[in-house]
Image (cartoon, rainbow, N blue to C red; front, side, top):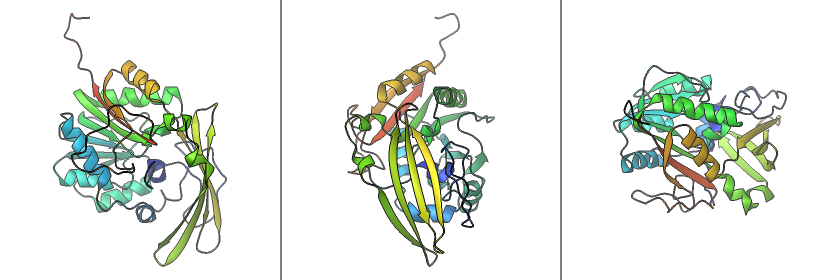
Length: 297
């Protein structure tokens, strides 16, 4: 069971509405679609608060547990909340996101980190990092095999030898034995800046595309409704291991908890479960293989 929390698609891309309340045509939920929460970063942080910085603290502890360095790239950084925290405890952090509004917010709120605009499926920066983080299901906006392979190729190209990839996402294997998240629509109400925003959310599985599709209807304070569509790739543990191996990574840990979005939630010092993968969340730690010395196969 997962705790209520954001998906980085809520912070970085895929839904369709403008911030003034005028509905746009619904979209297929791809990474280039618009998102009501993306257009309103402060509302996003009110909807998904993380006052204890659980996600960033978890990433820090996982990085230290597996011997990561201090140069870190946060892919799908959203409002910069995690990047800002990590920069504040001594990391040299770059955050990358596709949302201009989110990046503007991040730059104003978190001066210790650097933020750049880019697409996590095909980014190109002029530096290498010791750790790449990709949290809150941002990786799952790689909907196709080619997009996933491209993501991992670009991660490999931006890591130092033996660098770490740390990711946290929904777990495709969870849906093999549970319809818990599919059976009951979610309804939420958020009061922000003296106005109430309501959302009604349903999830369904697109088996052919191997996607978890979300339909969300927002009711804004003036009564206007916005219909927005999103989708995430459903990745299974063995499938993910294969793509990582092909891209030059060794999987150090792949587990369902504890993590920042699990129930029970991660606490400092908690060890990863022993490769369990039945829960709603999937946590990945992979190390880029060092190139073999010249002349060795």
